[in-house]
Length: 133
Image (tube, rainbow, N blue to C red; front, side, top):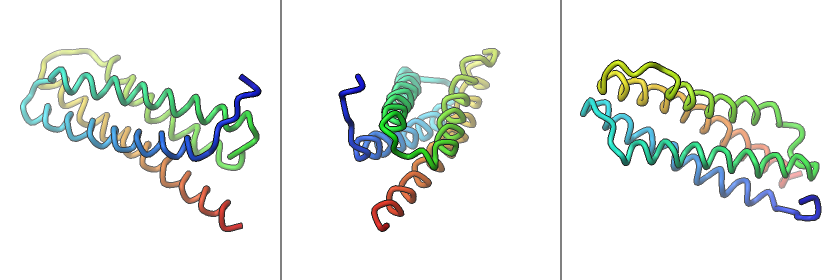
């Protein structure tokens, strides 16, 4: 694995896909909240978002191992852990009713989206600053 080198552009691409998925998931959870029930599409979106966040973390760890992005690692750690933690919290909360479950999903994915967006845009600013000198 140490001989395998990845480019920072991969991290940016996965980050963009993750941000888009977080946005779609947030919209789906708000639709579920309005309908007061979770659908299989909503659950699939939540799972997809979590898998993408894990993939993004794996790529980021590999880049850190290659010596890239060390300056901003704490922002990424907080952003990544925050977004994943909020999605995990959804599964830890008790399920009293479909309406409450959909409400929890809507608010927690919205908060997770905020963490994903913050981390993505701070990372993009860092990349642009590194390219400009």
